[in-house]
Length: 207
Length: 207
Image 1 (cartoon, rainbow over the protein chains, first blue to last red):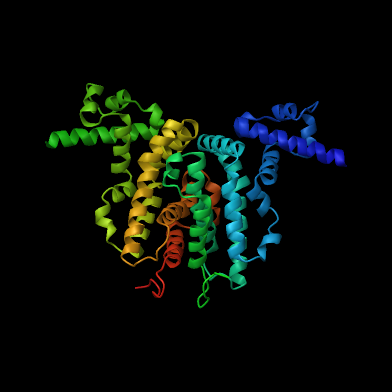
Image 2: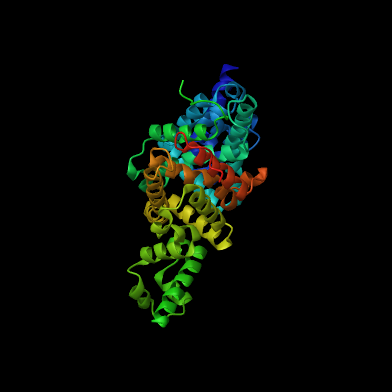
């Protein structure tokens, strides 16, 4: 049992390295098996039906923000002034890791050239994040903690407002020239969003 | 005079076509001169010092949202509940144009592979938009129309909250599966931002 777990982890680790060095297309089941020190690529299929499933699992287990949202039940009941800054920080700090930066560059590059890779990436990352946020926002509205609103829009707004800060780390260093730190941005942008979605009659968010 | 203006427009038109068909790197002064029907590429240098300057001018003149912000004085005094939805709509509708979509795909792809192209693109598009928004937000705070806040953060948040909607048009169609229209998103997301930045004591934004 422990050995099986180890082997699965070993495959995920090797796959993360391969995907971040070569992109989705460049990394193959064969090259991942080699990097994991397996005798045969067939062993990978014991754990994962195909490369896309392996990719999804790599992201879901190695990227802190995706790990946080894969078990929504844990977060769903906690209040937005706690959960949203937490997710924002995990999301931004993901891109301080050079391997994650490299992977983001490669995957976005591939997605611009190949619709099938855009779809895989879109499903594994973007739909997962947006899906979690829509459920989370809807639950907070239900609990009376946020005012009624279109959660498709607030989910996009939340993810999106952080993107220029990610862009500054991964693609466009010029964005960072004004010196805004992640912590300042989380505080200001998430604060603005909470303020903008505050239920009528409810006083400020400060504890 | 009229003839000079015509020729300059002709170059810009041809350059737009070339950049959107071939990306920044693929389009050359030579290929642009040919597409514009000029006898010699040297004629382009009469109007533009280099390819980067031509590129900046193409974007600034052909992309509606960049055209709108190139003369900030006109917008600076107008209220946020008018200006922000206007810019948001222009920005989103830009990507309904197939040539602009293609150009965005090519340029983002190039930017992921080449830092020097990321820098050119970052300066020509992202810094220009963020720069305008920071000035605009700061002026609105000065006028007491928005509460005091970090404008580096609200500028990023505004641009960013629209990005997933752009992403759905250009890169990741999966995002659009929930059916949120541009108009709904502008109304909801910009409404939330205005609400979140409303000066203390000021009543709702509705006219």
